[in-house]
Length: 589
Image 1: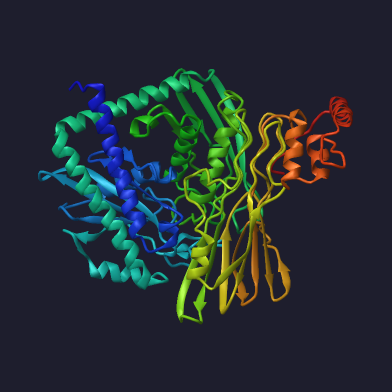
Image 2 (image 1 turned 30 degrees about the vertical axis):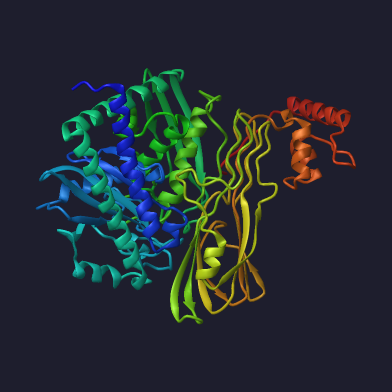
């Protein structure tokens, strides 16, 4: 079938619009702030036989692009006796999932009594049971401790909610009375997708749209191959480090070898650390999806569907913590390990295509959960906070500050919303000064916030990263600032022994937790930065005058202006010293 370019483009945008409307319906009707405000969700259309991605909403999390393919495939393998109105629920991380809090709904879509495709979405539920409120157990040693695990089961049968399955779910999670709102919102989004997709097929015909999908997949693969062909042939090595697994206080290494040959890329991570005791293992669906989103960051102009991934070949890293198998705990895989995998890809390819790459971003979602009983309302609550951080510098300019995570568009729920819904007050929300890595193009800055419990008692838990090592600089740039957590409990300061991971910190009214998120890595030699740009950063409070001198080699006078002769002498002397003593770099010690 031959399609003219205009019709092909219209159908492509029509499929995209179906997904966008599902996204909006989900957000507008969801009960949980983490979905409605923080946008931790995604919707897509998937092939009826293979489960391959056809289209995903612009407003969805990129990390779900790959994982929803795999979870849809798991449903296809197990689905029997399909009928219109059926909806499967699944969150099993070993069946194409991420962590247990990311709950997938998968629905067969019938057009004129024929199974035409699958519609699917993912929503981050604020709790699915487990050891701690919010599900981010930093000390879990098996998946059962992290929450309720659901294989693909029909939650809706012919459009009717199965009350027995629902009762099993609600009996095993916190805030059960509040989850029904998210369940109905998730199902409603798929219903909107059905309606909009039917309108598209009625207008252009099922055969015409199927032909367009085939052609769009072919063109996406062709475009990705053309982009890859611009990379010089060779094998490029990169690495990234996870602070610890939350149980054993030792770093975990991601060893990345990227081989470019012709118009294809092969990713080999088999030299990475073995499976770990704590929750920083990654299931293979998340590991592969992390590669996909990393390459999409490098080549954002390539449209996204299953064809985009065809030239990307991944050596499955069995025997490492990047290929978790039951019963390994995995709560940190989607939000944290996935970002380390992407950073390892960036670290490898920046050597091959420095003009397109950048220093490492903050690379953590800053997962912080606070759960307890509000004595004012007599109701349980779980507050889940996602934090932004600094982006890495690049040849194009400095990194942005307080940007969303590498894996998606999720953002911090407005603090006014959290203060309204939970017994807390945010006493500080500010730039994490000094956290941007020094470089010719400096990294962006993270944020620092302090939250105080106003009444009652609560338990705080967090799974974050980059507390031991800051995001890596590129081409001589300095690493970004690290993540830091401090709790002030009963007048005593408490710092988590694993820096960025802990659970069950008991808080009483008046206690506070302060979190500082990482800054982005610097790009290029810091002493090559324009002294006037450094002076501007100091005037804005980003760095101190001492940091300007030490990290950028810029001397400022009493008025905050660059003293150019003194700066030139300082930089020349420092560079001479570097030439006389070999530079030694160490990571992950």
